[in-house]
Length: 198
Image 1 (tube, rainbow, N blue to C red):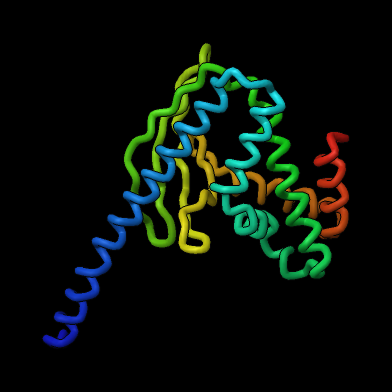
Image 2: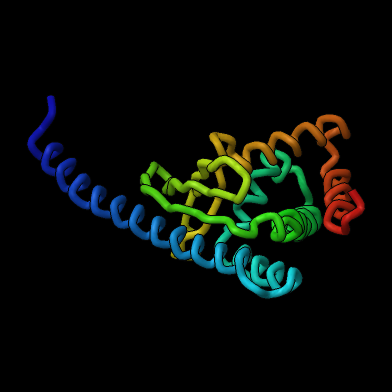
């Protein structure tokens, strides 16, 4: 039997939860809209390629929850890695991410980004957008926003339905499977990648 007390408590929870989720969606949408303006300003700005890369690196460090994404991408192997391996992997994950993103800054001259609706989900918020580059069809990109230290942070990017962090996790798992599940082998490969040797 559903008691009156249960109904009252459920109503109270819902009353507090709905505004909180709406606030989270509004915050995430504003966060991505601001990031979009900054990204476009960097990509289309008059500064040198090196200056643009440095500016992008600052945005990545500020707005991406790199530690959370890195741990997710390593999956179950995070628990088997030693503390030293976890530290090295985390630093190299950041280095590889920064290199992969900033090395392509020249390809985004003339880019535009229209930020759409934000949808609060159980543990995060998905903010939709459409990214258009000259000479290319518009791409649907969803920015998945979580919270780190009380502030919004990007924890995934879903481009045309493909999650970048899930793809990276799959790639790492495949590499480890072919290298005896040796986390150090992955770290060594990432070190070479960060140095531009692969």
